[in-house]
Length: 294
Image (tube, rainbow, N blue to C red):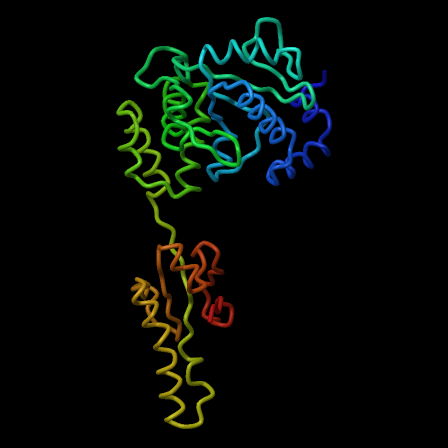
């Protein structure tokens, strides 16, 4: 049987299309997940999807080649007794894992009571799946705090699992996880979570809008029109001020440009502000090259 990984490696065009299908929830991995979840429910085997597919359904989407499932020792025995040779085959004789015979996708089973990372005893162990799972679209996934805790324990204890720490950092970033989530985790991993959170939030992004003052009255034909134009411009400025937008004290209002700044991405989105790193910076005196956001 040609495995899923082998097919990805041997056919780059198919691999690209498969990657696209993955993010549309139509890939072979997605199909294999749905199929094994249905079989486990039919067998009455408690389980929780962990790993990359759990991250995917929590909102951090990245490609993966396999499905990781948390089960008990008894559940694993039932799985092999009832499924091996019936749509699923072991990668090698005696393996605790299986492959979906139709797609070639590897199904990896993680057993309750064992330890993440280097496999050695530590304060964090793989829990009972029914204690840490929730159901979405008919599939049971591990809850987010447990997923974060397991990945931290794995990355902390094994140099080969450093990617798990990167995964947690990306979860913090993509899902805007709060620093307070550390309080829900085992003390063994709390310091690392706080460290990763600070790595993500250490330098807040600045969002900027360049306000060109001299355009306010350039077409005015009378003092009344000048006053009206200035008054009209004050309304959005007052609204922005109420939402915490400030005038950059260094940018000031020199050369008729005002640099309005916020570090709140929601406020930036509301007023059409852009990341400062995206602005065209020109140190010359030619003000025509400055990005005009208004």
